Image (tube, rainbow, N blue to C red; front, side, top):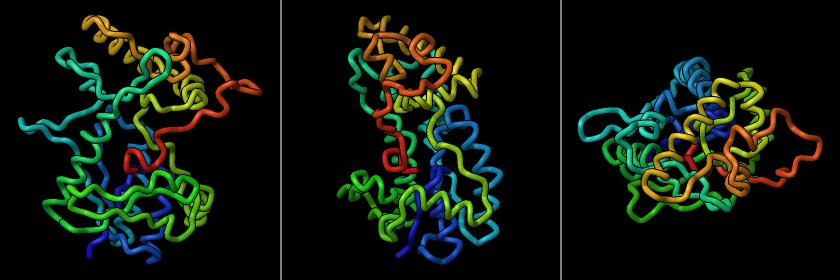
Length: 267
């Protein structure tokens, strides 16, 4: 049976690539579903181009890039689709007033479907590995009956948690992978938004602008506003005004859960 690994460029995925190179797991094809170069974190795009792809090539591991290509043959970009004047729906799990997230359409359209399409055409019946570590076992779910693959969880099988993944990458001499997610993902924690505001102010300003665009679209349709941060939704306050410039000693959001770690977006 062929083994394919769904790689998102994050810590767990990079550790799995190292384990594959070392012959400790049987995955010899790594597949990356690109939601668009304008939507992916620029740090992730750079890391994949400069570190992961050369490393895979060096060790004889096949790398496959896939993306959502619509019926007109256009490669879709999640960010462009959100800011397009002709877009009538919000595909992000933005938060409604009070803090309830909308449906996560983006993962299905831009990640799961392109990977499933490639597998159906090239490796039906394969095992699709996902980088879920032992500290997040609740995200390890079987494939759906309609899928043409079964899911594998090599890190769980080997008893490896995220901290061990970091050591695996470090011991291989690779730079630490950046956090893998879209730079405007609503599932960022308040701490992650704060770090972005401090370290990537231009990117944060772009997220502020995106939030205003999708809010305007909702208002035009007579619907409640939405927010890119959970804390903003709970308070009814936009990113620009709710995200602090620096982290406090005892932040009130300390128990927030990062909803965009490895399992959800197949990274």
